[in-house]
Length: 190
Image (cartoon, rainbow, N blue to C red; front, side, top):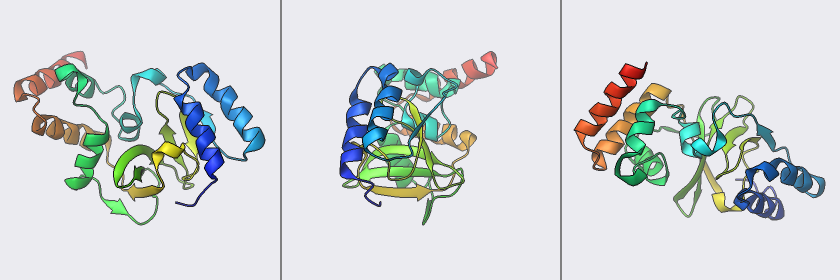
């Protein structure tokens, strides 16, 4: 990843760590006054606190089966670091040399997953930062904690994302009976 400027990324990191999300847009505007960047906050169709970067990038936001399964076992099985590493290791995600529209960009630090976002047609990324907002940004305009290695993968359709999550949950110890309960609950609510 091209170095966009260490100080910009450090300032974006500090902004993201501020738990008062209502201040993030103003903080970004202040950062932009001294550190030229193209980061833009985006509107969110779902409450911003209700999802993670992985849920957003993989199309799991608002999926009732995902939500039900993720509540099992005090929420230890969810779309996070372990799930993304599992998707890569099991080849659910197919790596590409460059970003593809609709694909995903995955950020690593020393080989460990840190962040994920959706690739746009113009090579930009749409991603949710921590507990903060949803942003449109260039590949290298991310908080410093997201690492310096970004890899790109083909689109994983929403139906494949939930299928992968069900397999991951099953392999992670969620009982088949509970998964079936979640799927039946979804069909009753549909």
